[in-house]
Length: 133
Image (tube, rainbow, N blue to C red):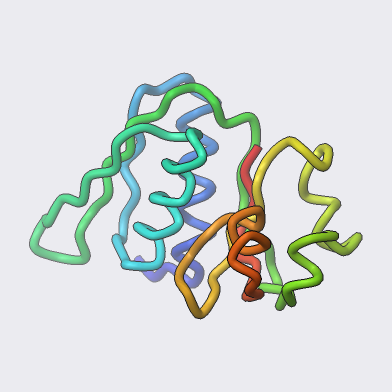
């Protein structure tokens, strides 16, 4: 099976398992970018433990869910955000979050994958990958 956007596949898998009230989600295929996105979500408290399982092919990621995700998904196309955009999110990004204080935008920056709040603290911009609230 060909996966055209593994990050979108991971967000969809998390949302579907959370909607079904499952305690864990299995994401396949595994990649460094997906693991870093999940670690960012883990730092913000949306998911529990993240474990990578080597199945001899592409690998799988097992994520412990905590029931804290109301909605998550990819942002396509992957919009570039400058430092100023991380402070005051533009309208085309703001539409993904329900309010200013609720949720995060996951951004891939030159300093690694982080939330938009952390990117504003570090004073860097990047590419928007997805949203979680």
